[in-house]
Image (tube, rainbow, N blue to C red; front, side, top):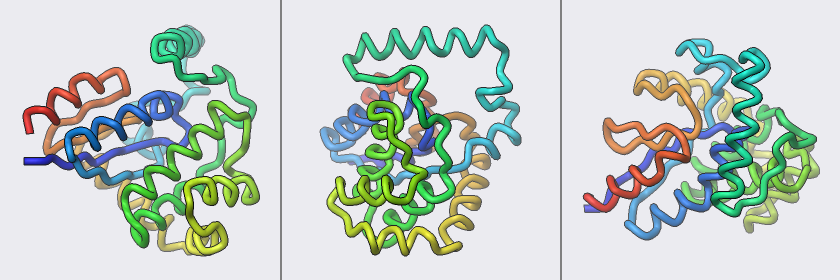
Length: 201
């Protein structure tokens, strides 16, 4: 029996970006469904004991950059370790992803989220800029004018907050998190375990 993955992401997370193509491929290979939740991890950190990057100790920040470089080289995925537009405001990008999820479908929303991440981490572009975001929406085959207008509706920001509370209730605390039933797999470095779980069905 095919499984379902609830996919909790930050649209600023390099780790979500590094796992993006692989989780898509795994889900497709195993016939799993996926639903994306671009929640506010600032709020989740505040409730779960995590710290946003600027507040982490210098040693942890330095190690993060080393580890990103290791994973970049290991996976062969280009990534700018200190991109020009990081962090990028999610005030419009996340509601647009949620609006696509709710009105068009899960896979188009996932494609848009991954395109936003690529813009930040590979292309030195700012998805927070409405003109840039409109281009990214077009890149994934969606109607930019319609998606941008829809994403500006307050209901998606409200839904994002509710999604974040639901994530906390499920014990999600970091991005990316791949949740299958009651099992949480935190981080793109856990994708091997995600694949094993999908294979078991």
